[in-house]
Image 1: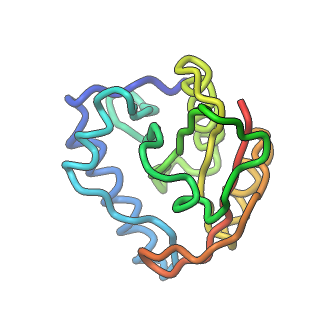
Image 2: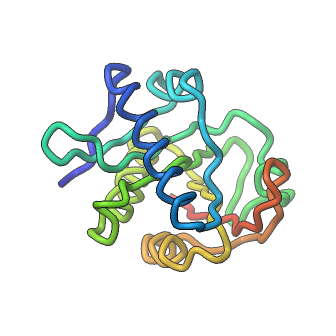
Length: 171
């Protein structure tokens, strides 16, 4: 199953997948670094310069990730003055809200979403790909490292006090 770019017609399914994943984590008593996104936040990401990728099982959305063209100050996001290999005029993007339905985890969908993000970065001439990954989420760390990302900083996220690795890859 290859990720495809979602249109705004999938807004309800994107919101429902987020709710399902959050409910499952709560039910299992697992801590997580998932900041619930509003409908308006999803709507914004259906429009360029952003994108949302999704993977389907039949007609059901089972995995998704938001590709965010970075519009805000990089030191605020990374807590670093510059990134490795950074030059004046470089462009940045962040993969956010990468979620896989609980019944479909462990099947490589997250890796496909990260690969799709890197393809999107290349197509949009993005030089730096970024993500924040909860420090205790070994599977996510492995997937990003397997796709060429490295940890460039470890921070506490001001929104929810989660300890996260800032991961980076030059495209």
